[in-house]
Amino acid sequence: MFRNRTKIFICSALWLTCLCIVLGLKTGESSIGITNAIQAFKVNNAAFASSAIELKEAVSLLSAKDTAAVLKARSTLKKCRLNYKRIEFFMDYFFESSSLIYNRPAKVEVDEPYMEYQEPSGFQVMEAMLFDDYPFLHQKELIEQAGLLSSSAADLDALLYGFEGTDGQLLESVRLELIKVITLSITGYDAPELKSGIEESWQSVGAIQRVLQPYMEQGHASTQLSKTLNQTLAYLKEHPDFDTFNRAEFLTGFALPLQEELGQFITDLNLSVNQKSNLNYAAKNIFSKDAIPASAFANISKTQSLKGALGKKLFFENALSGNLKRNCSSCHRTDQYFSDGLKTSLAFDGKNFVQRNAPGLLYAGFQYAQFWDGRVKNLQEQIKTVIANPLEMNGNHEVVFANLRKNSQYKVAFLKAFPESADEPVNMDHLADALAAYLMELAPLNSAFDQYLAGNKNAMNAQQLKGFNLFMGKAQCGSCHFAPLFNGLIPPLYKRTEYEVLGTPANDDFEHLLSDKDTGRYGFFPIEYYQAAFKTPTVRNAAMTAPYMHNGVFKDLNKVVEFYNQGGGAGLHLDQPQQTLSAKPLHLLPEEVTQIVAFMESLTDSLNLVIPSAK
Image (cartoon, rainbow, N blue to C red):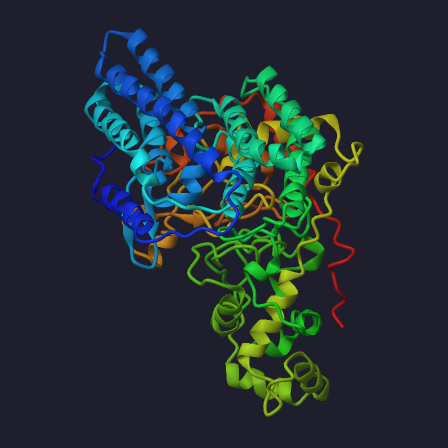
């Protein structure tokens, strides 16, 4: 399971970061908080470096016969993580490449399109080894990892040579750290075994408070912000247990109000910058409808509404197909939340079936890859591919255009939507843009869950709220289905789409599982880490879009949750050497499985505003 980790990428990244700083990271005029942040970084890094040395000593004492040594090593790893969280916001923002040494996910990541493998290192890979059944067998690698941490931590102050940041950048760094708390830390994303996410959140919010203090002392005091910070810290301190932590109460009562007040504070200081993320910082909070703008995924123009209206009509247009009988809604039916209820959709010939399940289209555009294997990067490419695919629409592009151009209404609609192309507005690029514009509108965010977070405390029942806390906690669902869209769009920058290897089987009999033959992303990028890897879809509206998984193997959500509860394919004894999902069981009780499903049901949108008529 654990391989020797290369250090070449890591060391070169650290050198490159230092070089970039020396060569001229420049600052703006304002520097109210920078000096304070640098001093705090030095102090907190000293504590981190000291705990990294302790960690190296602790893992060097591991023994097959000494359970206490294992517990000591785990405890020391937790201490080291907590110390790192005090400087995480600064590292992740200003020294991103170097920060990867410490808290990279415990799986190989692929830097596309260059196909460079980024081996796991640091806390998360050490955690996986320390919680293995036989951690002492990994002692050599644990010592290597701890040595890397301690040596690099000792040199972190060197990163500050010639450093000059701005107040705007510093405030953006803590803004992003708070989003990380809301979306990652409380889910156990980077410490699933230690379950230290709540205590780490306390450290992160404390770091935010320390960064903000100089601004408040310079006559920019915000009584409410200061109060909310203190209340948030107190709540985290009083409720440190990961499994019982009430995430719904924390978000609505503390974290989301804090995000709103922090955003307003930064705006009032006229120091709002966005140099890192695809978020809309003007949004009220991360769960607001405008928090993740469609413009991050699609080219939004002045005629976007006209394009969407045209795309809505084209969605039901049989002229896009080779037999003039099929359209987009043939496999994405509006009465089934833009899915079709089949394991895999009926093919063009009406007899056979396509390879994969037709997922619902709501929020589908809010990803940086399309199709289950992510083989195209945007909706436009996907639309063109589907229309031409012999198994799907089997539409010859030139024939499609010829049919559409015969319709005077279409000619007028295309010209209005694409006025810059008066010569011939009806073409494949425009058709794909119009359909994509419509699909980007399929993001209502009006479910019971959204209403609850917006202030309607009666929108969710007790079972659904318990399910949310499990989803974002003990069940670890939120560590792959990231808030707020609950898909594979990775916080806090929301610039990447994640792929996972779950070990999805070919059948749903857990006692007699069969291996699925679909190679997933490997068919597009033939590298071992992509074998059976698939894009993580949203679970919003999942209650309405059965069956599930890329092959439609599971008929209901209870079966899906139980599959995860058992540790995916590897946990159910399928041979899945590249599985990224932990093979360890979650130990969810039957009533907890029911509660998680109840939460997912609360993610069902009302489609009154997005379901169009066919004409």
